[in-house]
Length: 292
Image (cartoon, rainbow, N blue to C red; front, side):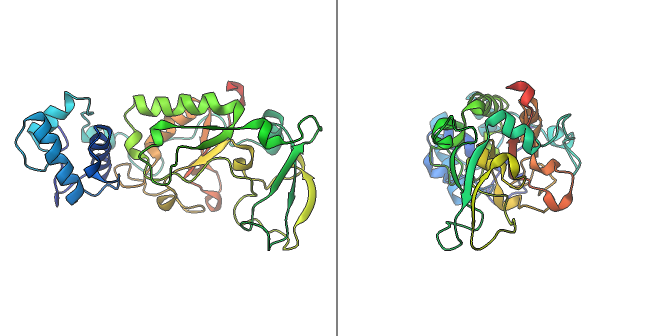
């Protein structure tokens, strides 16, 4: 049975997001942003779509509007799809785990880095990356970090057309977002919180005075973001150290539906970290180096 939506109705948040993404993709900017709220903006955008399609103008995703939308590529999803993916233990973890420090340095290259005194630091964990540990690359970032435009993120808040990642996973990033697009899951991206960031893991205890040059291979507390191998989405609903929320995949901010395809192309989800104090549901990191 088709999932219908209306302003003030008993709506499924994820399906409101899907409908909003559909309207925006049809160049109806009156829909505003993807926020899971079928409010005035979504109602007005729905009316515009109804006028375009020649169906009764009700402002709701009713049966006639839903049928018209399906002819234009809208996904016909039933609640059975969601009920088969319910619970805080879905999805199950993959066969591989988060990478060790030795593995990521071997795959992406060891770099030299330093930590400035607290005053000049942009934030507590920011590091300054220099050349490669073997001296072959004078500027490790320039040699290894690329900037691409992941167009599938264009409706995500805070995305500015720049996705920075390690050159070795550029193809994997494109493959992953292509899969998510083919599966009709782009409506799940509410916000984008970055990929490559030169820093330690958040909340690492660090000296106020900073420190001199160190090798990335000798420090286990560097973030995977510093290697350009991780990215974060929907941070507000999936804060670090908290059980990834919400476990109900129909709710606003859930990223659980994204995880199976991420695992299939080699990305590990932070919601599968083994220690609850390390849960990071916003976080996806490349981990299956056998796929490189």
